[in-house]
Image (cartoon, rainbow, N blue to C red; front, top):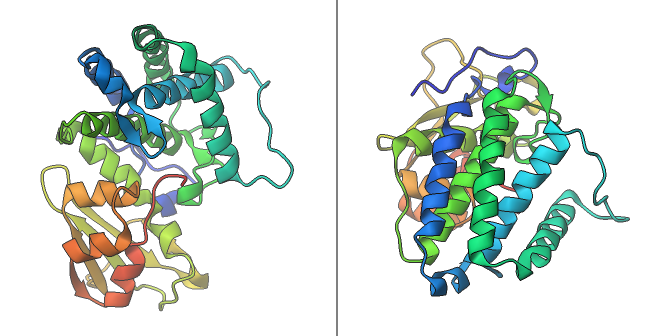
Length: 287
């Protein structure tokens, strides 16, 4: 699948745009199939710290309702930041509020509702204008972000939560490269933001290389003024550092299922170790 779009002015440093629109429907279908295949006891298994499989499904439903209400329907009522509340604290609070509110809903009713509302959410993303301004993506340092990045970010969240449910019930990662290649491509858009503040001469390149059919190579280039960019650069200059990861380690690192120290122990590094270690601090979720 070619998941790239034409570049958008003003966001070239994020790299070539990603088109995840056609993947929302099959990803949603895979989620519903996973949920319908669960045994009653599976819903009580811990999927992420503090949340069961049922809680995670409730969180996904809340995300879908929020996207449709805000961006499709123009609904602006809802929770606001409390005094002194950070973005991370706010997000965690409102997510927990959804989980608590839906605690009275049975797994069967939750799945039925998620099938309906998630399907509408998939259609919303399919029809979205990828070049329009949208919600900020804090872990990429883009606010506002172009819709292509905002939607790709949501795709990675749906995919990641499905993997967490699978892992909770003893299933492995779904490594289908149709999905995982777009997930990894999206996660790596955090690389320039990750490297902000890392001092290096303009033109210095740091590369992350992920092996396997879903993998690829992402090269960040140091710019004047301390910024970094994923925009394609010209010239034969080799990267000053390359961090080599397998796909499983890469996506888990970006979602903090694996900590940087563990990822480094699994990685191979070519070139400047300090630059490679800086790249290994990448995180592509709010945590």
